[in-house]
Image 1 (cartoon, helix red, strand yellow):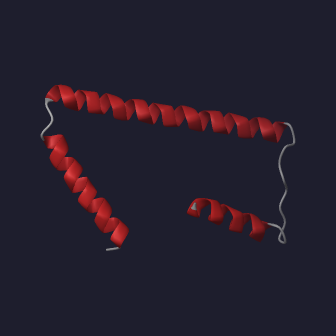
Image 2 (cartoon, helix red, strand yellow):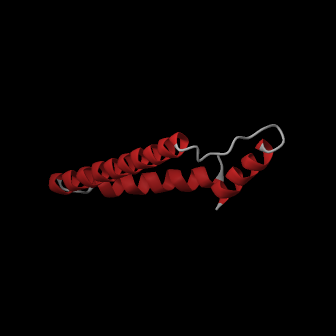
Length: 82
């Protein structure tokens, strides 16, 4: 098990213990907050997709070939590590 997995597992165990002590009302509040967060994330994703589709329609994109594609992949990996 990696260190990250072990930390996440311990965090989940701790959260489970905390949640089990909540009252029903507090659990409902928690559920509502989680659902609202998911809804916000979905709305943000929809907006990003709409922007991307509009950019495609307007020709605002870059075509990649065998020479330029490796550089794009490298840039994506670098962004992911930030």
